[in-house]
Image (cartoon, rainbow, N blue to C red):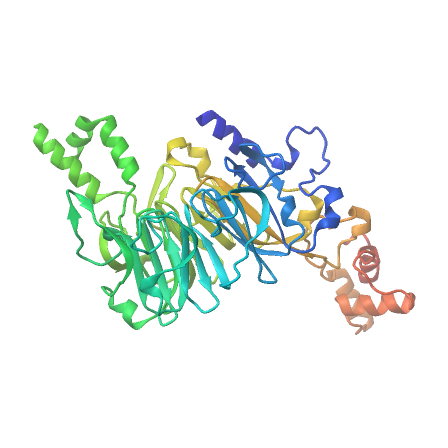
Length: 528
């Protein structure tokens, strides 16, 4: 199994668009015959596809190469939200579409079971402004700010134990307008427009301080309760909030970041203890030589933790929110959580990450760098979900990393560049990247092409090939102007005037500027 996933990573990192080819011809992720169908924003994806979450006409269980999602072409997609086996798409004109499976009522409709292409979501009585996919349920924020849920009952915020097949109002929040919602598979939070934080799920993960255990099992809080154990939350609004497997990170409007919950990966600890109890116990306390003391040390080890996803540099769980001092100097704009790690994005577009990072445990935040480099990435957006992570940089490059701990390989946690040479995609802007905890990814492209005035597209093909900055005026040309007293305008303004003067009947276009631009700027071609 490990070899299978290492092979996937090797192929992706080597350039998915050139697999099995002996020449440099591009691979068309968007087939030329399908280009005419594009009406705006569209979606491509890759990864595991057990429930055909990638909406393929002839689905396979896994896509190691990037594939287009053809049924997204005829809609102008703005963003997407991913669950384990279902997806919701939001178009720029306010419509919602779903795909995947409706096993637990995730679609919020009883009329559909499983769909292999985008299908419009319609509700004749309720209107929604946002739909958020959790792993096995869906939350709907109405245009009036009310919060509704459908799907598996455990985290719907209701007292019922029955799945909901249609959007159902959460009674405890019926008098509140919801601004933010975050969830994992064990706990959830909602922030009202008035700044009040509500939480529900496993009580020891909610930040409420004391909680009840019955036979060593933490009691679940099924309905939302106010989280008022942190004075900062009562004074300042929460700007961004994210849930990991058993921890939570919140960003306040002041720029401070708080974390609470468990600070370790219980799966890893359990596996280590089961594999070699005696050795682990002896390492924990060399002075304890009897079985009873060894068992006590195991219990301490499980409660102490060692993953560091709370980012405060110590190996302790927190039952109430704690300020993460290590990021106070950063100008943070958003927070994200994976299962056992956390990240923040700054105004300088740098991403800092901490917690479990493959074999490495990062106790305090460190900048995210690509494999083999110490140069931090300039990040436009990061999406974390479970063990899977995807990043888009300011330059439009896309990296991904992570894999389920059961399939763990070291190489899987090296941020890997997706090499895309489809001419159509290289001329369009990435507006969103999204990861699913079920091991698949989606990338949203804007429908508008990117054109740069200094590229001669007529010589490079029918579509833009790669972004280039406008060429500056050469030093030779500047010196010549100074020597002969030239004061003519430079760069784009000058070029447009010269072009119009020489050919007054021709409208300036991006497909005919490159060669003329170079000639007007400098007659000595060797200088450039």
